[in-house]
Image (spheres, rainbow, N blue to C red):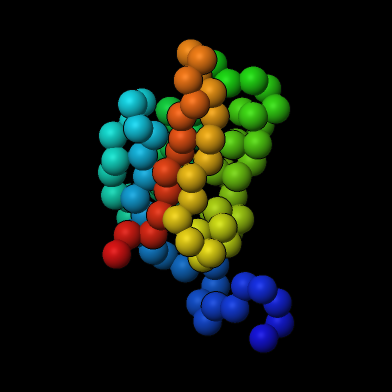
Length: 95
């Protein structure tokens, strides 16, 4: 093993992903990590996020390799605040 992340396939391999932002974007299955990241960013960029948070989401969701690396560790839940309520972005490999 060469590190904490021990996988046999490249992290950019094609996997279906499930993405949702409860109360904002309904759960949907996407054919690839890249497609899920693009769909999430299309919604998140329209929300009233602070600059730092928006930039962090943009960087993560525009890099399929980075996003796949996080998903290889398990489903991801990323929090943000909107209208005084805590919300979350949910992303996981399908199946």
